[in-house]
Length: 376
Image 1 (cartoon, rainbow, N blue to C red):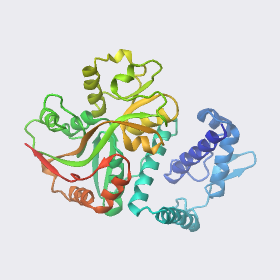
Image 2 (tube, rainbow, N blue to C red; image 1 turned 90 degrees about the horizontal axis):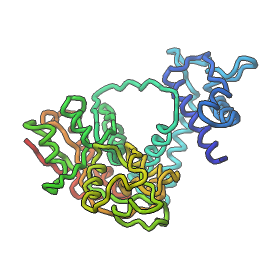
Image 3 (cartoon, rainbow, N blue to C red; image 1 turned 45 degrees about the vertical axis):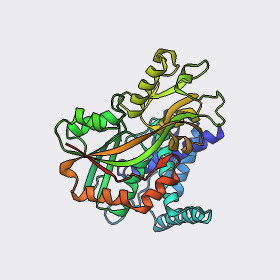
Image 4 (cartoon, one colour; image 1 turned 90 degrees about the vertical axis):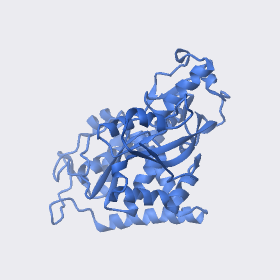
């Protein structure tokens, strides 16, 4: 319980910090009373007090006798909050210390970047599973690419590295599944889709689905990764699960991906081949929209097995039973292929740091990363 409370107090502090920095809470505004916040987050009042005390030590809030905790009145020249410069220096020092420690253990900077991407993915997944105040997204400047499609840690890593390599180019991500990504591309609501859709009739990935959803439109498929897919199970695989047919066994509780995801499409084909009715699988209707969400459910004991990629299992220290290898492609309209923003994406894909970072994540193969397939 104590470990959970510690984690929650950090979550509360981070949520309020973002609201303050983004201007949703202005100087002088009163924070939600401790007891009300405790009920909202299902924690003890002491946990909320710890979060508010942390914000106070950072100079973001001050406590007022009889007046609650309020956003600090200290402002910068433009009227916005201006945390002391030492706070930024301290943050940079902490990041540098992490990097130096990783290098001292024999890892490359790319490995450290990949580990950070995995940690952020885990953090975002946990945060998204809790109720939190909604903060406005910070407006982006420059060129922004809209990614919509299947979830993968490599996509999150690409978005981070793209912003670092080419600050004028940003990539937003919306993980709604492979088919959802292709449909968003067809409606003009995305610039890039991410897909790993396996066609049973042809044995090919993505091309048959692109031809159906985007008929007659020139499209470029560029390979992002080849990745291992299999069963995500607790450490030691206590139920000794080895194949898709085992999902219908006694005592097995499954966590699924949403309809339209490439993983769900593949699973349903395999269940049909194995003669397993979905109704026999406890938890078949429990759905997550990301591989990280599946891994988190297994890690927290909400399920005894899920289907996903090895990188997600490794991010939570879980075991993995390999079932196959699949191709994950970025799908780009032909007319955008030579645009400035796409050139930056292509350069990032071809870079050694990106490939090194992918290889440091379990279950990826990059021999075809950046390979192009044109579909008319």
